[in-house]
Every structure is written in structure tokens, then in C-alpha cells.
Length: 305
Image 1 (cartoon, rainbow, N blue to C red):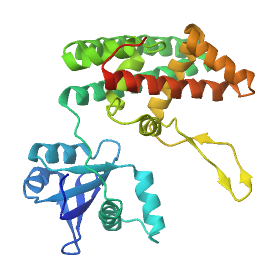
Image 2: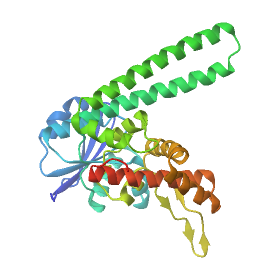
Image 3: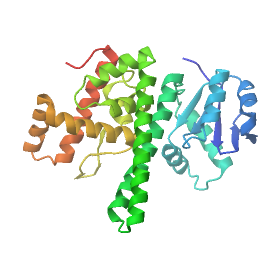
Image 4: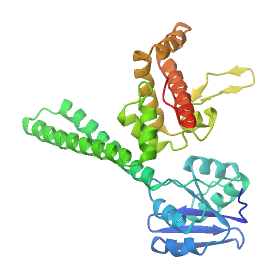
């Protein structure tokens, strides 16, 4: 285990980063164009920053190229930590200081960098999701449109989006088959019931921890871990929340299919529904069961049996 002497907090913006150094109690602003030089000049430090929807990627790439460790944290967790420590103000400098304190207080572990193949896969999956959202929007507009010209125009746009979705899916398949590790992992995942090409590529891109953590940790990462809601004598229902919403949606869909076509999952769902569980709760339980199985398959490098 590497012990970091300092934890730098970094607030990321589009054109610059704000860095808080606890050793000097100073905040400095560095232009995005200077990130490579910044990363090369770091010593034995851990850099902590938030996931910001893509603006953090240049910083990640600079740190990885320089071999510097970093921790990429959930913005919600960082905000909750700030409130817990009494900081209600939100500025770039305050956020950088909070991230530094969070890294030290929670003893954050370094985020393992993605290999280039998975990184490209993640970008392709994100692009496919963009196209699917646009296609869904256009399909809904078509249902509401009444003017003949507007309907024709929407129809042409739907055709273009469908063609682009097909092109992205072909590129995803080619990217997976071109990498031996991804191809083997995909073959294992595809052997499980309910896991088709789209869900398989999403799991490979968005859940790289699959097979590397225990069943509780993987369920929490996927947003499928049930959380208690209790206080005093009150015993509320457990709910799933947090985690990666796109992974949870994909596994829910896979579990829905598996619970209809696989005898074991069908029996498991039926048992839960017979016990009075709502259909959605039963499917979520199937999704969690499927995820645990997939995690064991990836860990043991075996196919579904």
C-alpha cells in the first residue's frame, strides 16, 4: 500500500482547475493547457477530484501519463461531506479544500485507471446512449405531430438516428472482438440469461469492477443494494438508491428477460411474488441475483451454468 504524504483537492472546470495544497494552505488556479506540466511536477500526493461529466478527463489523462495516483469521487458524496463539516458555501476554492479534507478524512483509495480499450468502449457506449435518447425523443414527437411535413421530417430524422445507432453498435462489436480480454469477458457475460450485446457492452464499459470486488460492493456500485430506512420503533421499507443508474437500468432489463425465459430466475421471481412482493421489487431482486452471478463468473473466469 502506498502512503501519500499529502492529498491535493482539485475542483475541475472547463478551462482551468483550482488546486488546494494542505501543506501550504494555498489555492492556485492552473489552466487546462498546463495540466501535463502540473502532473509531472507532483510528488508523493493523491489528487482528489469529482466526476464532472467529462471535464475531468484531461486531468485524468495527464495524471495517468505522469503515473500519478488520483481518486475520482461522486459529486453527491463530496457535497454531503461538505455539509457534514459545516461548509454550506460553494465556490471553486472551497470545493478544492473540501475535496482535500475528504481525501484525508476518509483515507480514499486511488482509482484504478481504465485501460485504453475499456476507455474507448465507454465513449462508444456513451455515444450510443446519446443516440438512443434522441431516437426516443423523436419517436415521441412523431406520435404527437399532426402536420404532414413535420411528420415526414421527423420520420427522416428517425431513419438517420437508427442508421447511426446501427453504426455505433457495429463499432462496439468490432472494438470488443479486437481485444482478447474484452472478447473473453463478453463471451462469459453473453452466456448469462438476459444479457444481450447492448447490456454486455454497457457492463464492460461502465462496471470494470466486475469480478474484482465482493458481492456486496458490486451491488452497491450498481445501485442494487437494499438500504434500510429505520428510526426508533419505525421500520420502513428498504430501498435501492445511489450507484450507477445506467447499470441498474440495464440489469433490471436483463433480469426482466431472464425471469421470463430462464427456469431458475422464473421460479425465483414467482416465489417472491407469491410471498406478496410487488413485481418491480421481485425483478430488482432478480437483477441483484443476476449481478452476483455475473460477478462470480468474472471472478472465476467461467461461463453461466
